[in-house]
Image 1 (tube, rainbow, N blue to C red):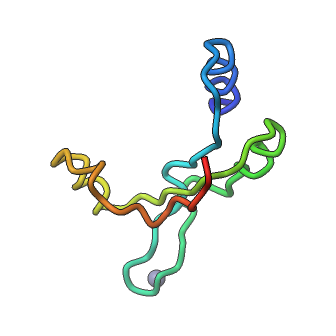
Image 2: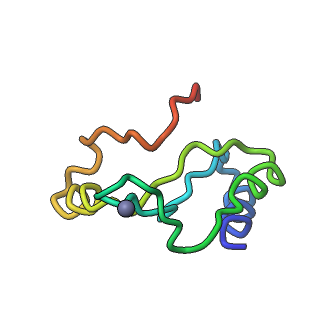
Image 3: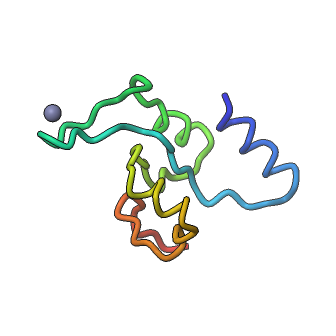
Length: 87
Ligand SMILES: [Zn+2]
């Protein structure tokens, strides 16, 4: 619902929506690499299809990202979780 609301708001303000990035999508187990869906199953693909925009990526809860944000280096870091898309 929040995604649809944000999409609607962007549209109202004539801001083009290029796609959706799902935040806090999962946590990767440091021991076995398994992806744990702490907030339940994702429905982002259905929502994206409904809105007619692509899913650009799914961001896990990653301490390295949190650290980069804290140190204001977020824009410098490589983000392996976002797909390469032609925009
Ligand atoms: Zn594990």
